[in-house]
Length: 209
Image (cartoon, rainbow, N blue to C red):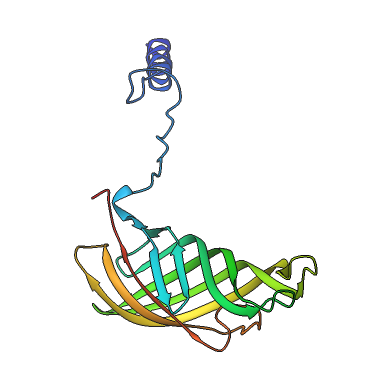
C-alpha cells in the first residue's frame, strides 16, 4: 500500500512539472516584448517661408521645420534654413567715370534645434540653439581693366542661441500658429541677430491626425 502511494505522488509531481504553459506548449513562458512606436499624430510640420523687400534690396527665407509633441504643452524639433539677401549700391567706375550698380549678395545656411513650451492657451516660450554658415566680406577692390568692383569673401560658421516668447493660437490639439520675438544671447558680431531682435511668425501643422 505504501509503495502504491509513493508511486502516485511521483506521477503527480512529474505531471505538474510537465504541465503546458498558457500557450499550449511545454517550452518555458516568455513574456511579450512591448514595441514602442512613434505616434504620427504628434508630429508637427512647419513650412517656413518668408520674403521681404525694400528700396533696391530684397530677402527670402526657406526654413522647413519638423517637431514632435512629447506632451500637450512641450515639443522639440529641428529646422533647416536658407536665407538670401541682396542689395544694390551705386558707385562710380574709376576708368569711365560713369555711375554703375553693384549687387551685394549674401546667401546663408542655418540649422537649429529647439524646444517650445506652451504656457496656458496663448503664451509660447522658445529656446533655440542655431548654427549659421554665413558669408563674410573680406575686402573690395577694383578691376583696373574694366573698373568693376571685385569682392573677396569667405564663409564662417556662426553660433547663436535664441530665447524668446510670443503669442500662439491653437486650431486643434497639437497644431498652432504663432508670432514671437527672440533675442540672441551670444551676440556674435558676425551673426545676423547681432544687436537686433528676431521676429518669427509661422504655423505648425499636424498632418497625421
